[in-house]
Length: 311
Ligand SMILES: NC(=O)c1ccc[n+]([C@@H]2O[C@H](COP(=O)([O-])OP(=O)(O)OC[C@H]3O[C@@H](n4cnc5c(N)ncnc54)[C@H](OP(=O)(O)O)[C@@H]3O)[C@@H](O)[C@H]2O)c1
Image 1 (cartoon, rainbow, N blue to C red):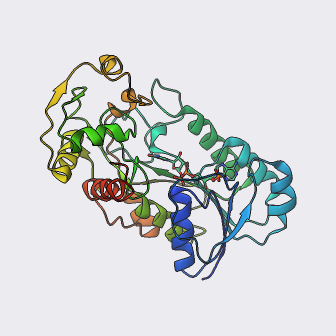
Image 2: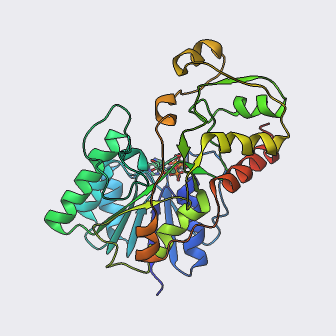
């Protein structure tokens, strides 16, 4: 059935792809952004774009509250956004929020599923997102705020520099591989990683539109089917470039001293957390069906970096 879908963050990597797929699925789609994002964007033909700040109470209460919206999807929600939606947007049947599997770390069992603990702060988890998600579920339990939380793993695919083995998205890592230069990394090749291909992740939101009752009050992990090791991930990149780079190792905390010129945000602590997640709940509840492996997503991302002249 055709729905009126509003996507907050519709020019983003995931938000844009949700918008594209929702139009292609026959929905009536509007999008919101502030018009600031200059990164690679998908074709938004068919999406009625509005310029606005979703953190602005007047925009939510005076502009969005007057719109006919069946499903609101926020790809980058803050707790403040959630409070505004629950206060002013009573007409919406379903709210879909993009969260992260970074809420679950460190994983206590593999593959981790939606029952895995996530509510407490740890040294590595994305605790701000945990606080927001707790509030979303509280609103669902207390007021039947019709929300669904989607938790993607690390995102990969065309449009953004992929994660590297310095724990960031630093193109310099891949330039070194391409140019056969030596690279030093922490000893991490045995660590598990599970990336989600950006189009597959976006498809989860669009598929769930068809199951409005079944998804309310639920959390769904979305990713590719299986985890691989960082060693396999690195090998995929090496083979993509035909690289002859020599890979050396040092303790993680020494990497910054070796590469002071590299602009890494250095979430090495997060990279060293094994990621292995179970996507069967999303498969069962709304037919989520990822099409790419982590390696295939990485190859597409590296091909995009090449085509975009970043390498
Ligand atoms: N990166 C990862 O590996 C990873 C892993 C797991 C989960 N996640 C989650 O996945 C989501 C990423 O979404 P994405 O890739 O689509 O993000 P993105 O590419 O950074 O795009 C963000 C979008 O939101 C818009 N936006 C930001 N602030 C806004 C505001 N105040 N009002 C209106 N629009 C606003 C931006 O446009 P303007 O700036 O022009 O407004 C843009 O359209 C995030 O929730 C992240 O936590 C990411």
